[in-house]
Amino acid sequence: MILDKFSLKDQVGIVTGGGQGLGKAFCLAFAEVGADIVVAEVNSETGAQTVQEIQNSGRRSLFIETDIRHKSSVDAMVKKTVAEFGKLDFIMNNAGVVHWQEAEDNSETEWRNVIDINLNGLFFCCQAAAKQMKKQGGGRIINIASMSGLIVNQPQKQTSYNTSKAAVIHLTKSLAAEWAPHLIRVNSISPGYMEGPLAGEYFEDPQYGGVWFDATPMRRPGKPEELCPIAIMLASEASSYMTGSNVVVDGGFTLW
Ligand SMILES: NC(=O)c1ccc[n+]([C@@H]2O[C@H](COP(=O)([O-])OP(=O)(O)OC[C@H]3O[C@@H](n4cnc5c(N)ncnc54)[C@H](O)[C@@H]3O)[C@@H](O)[C@H]2O)c1
Image (cartoon, rainbow, N blue to C red; front, side):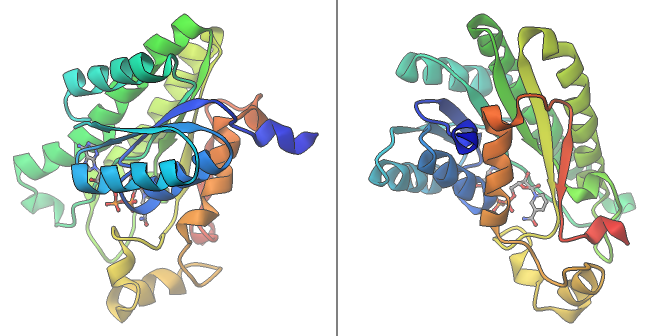
């Protein structure tokens, strides 16, 4: 059956930033199609809540307090996952932050924090996961980039974010080429404006949401659950010939 290829039954996956927003939706969706999920979060309260919801749905789940900015924390995340579940089949690198400010006024700390989480931390996660996947004979890595890696948003000024996400798209391609011989597939998803804590509070504001959705052919934000089927495809056998792809899910925003 073609739909069997989308199953993640008895697969083990990590989701970074799984405590809220898109990350939480990915965790619950992966569990729904059969995966056991490690929720790797810097926020222990929200992380534990997601774990509880996954367990309530009948799958195994573990919270691992992780700050992806630190390589030691990321390495421990993968080590604990394998100690608990015996393997790592896929990782969804979702944790990310945005900072709005005119570029000339970005402090060194603010600039570094965005790059440290969105790019450096994501790379440490790819690296640690790939070391384990190489030993196992393969795996799948899904990176959450953004349409901001392809275009420059307006009116908000977010150069550090746009830069970090453009780098994630090219990092994904580079790693895909390098790790294809190890049967590790690496793809990214670039969402447009999505409902949730990161951008949701601005949707009703004509100065922001008004501008954004005038520029979106579908005239509305996406819902987290509208990204989940793509995430499942990239984590599963359904995408067996895909690597280095950047899947844009933006209601058409980047068309105009
Ligand atoms: N929401 C959108 O409109 C949108 C659009 C395009 C891309 N994205 C991307 O999707 C991803 C998720 O966005 P979201 O809207 O769910 O954001 P969110 O702020 O709701 O959630 C991000 C999660 O990452 C966690 N996190 C932050 N720093 C961390 C760290 N150092 N280590 C581990 N976890 C950390 C946070 O605690 C939080 O739970 C991000 O990479 C974001 O850039 C979001």
